Length: 385
Image (cartoon, rainbow, N blue to C red; front, side):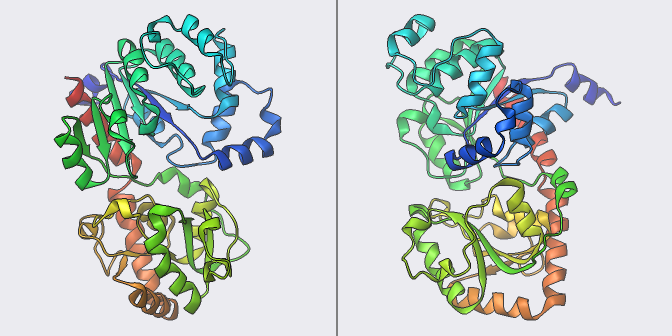
């Protein structure tokens, strides 16, 4: 082991990663895993992380590999947080009376009265862990009073964002905000908040869990149809009217009753199921939300390529910095271009397979969470200094 590695391991960071999961996903998970009702906190958390929702434990497992200490908290999982509180002899109520919270956590009395059950539970957790870094994957959790309440127990409060930001009052509690949107870096810095460009990635251990499904797919789309995606949904509907497009997602209530996206709609898909859909698909169609503006950033870029599908995504100014366009991924300019290219690559299997293989190789070489956590460790140390 070289001296640099020794120095790193003897100076490990303690990081608390705080995330929130979609409520529909949590409800489904706990309904299907009633066997976990009496399981320990650690066993329940491990089962939840094994679902591979969002970034799951990709941060913690790769930071641990670097020698850091990292703990995952799913802040809006009531069952999970109740188990942690019970195992640490702390009271926990889903909707605690405000005055009881004030008595239990006296140092928040001078701040806004907490109305969200997650936040007093978070204060308890952060106080108990006393990490070097509290790392929020959901910026909207950091109410101004919460930032003040946890500051005595953390050296650095960090947020990460890849979606439209919450109102400015949530932002100023952060010492640093990381974002996969290059344009957000400038905007956060203009507010006097430290900010760095930090890309999303693919977790290579997922490859061991990919399986062949009974049904293979041609072109697929997995995603949402909420407000920030409305404009891009028009192109997807045009594609679905011309080519069979198998669709999974949420927010379908915003689609017209006769939307062609409903023709081959299969319901919601989360976590490992999404990766297996991509692994069994020839083409994954991607589009970015309006918040991305002219920049490519989203998780689907790396999930699709990492899983071995050919990615076709909307043209963005920086896409060529992430992949070689035309060789590792394919880009489309508008709905007509999208239809033409999906048709072409479905009809030209050798070319499609070659691009898919090149895209996967690029992701496994340059866009893994092992890569990103090395970058993150360096960024955090810089700001801690």
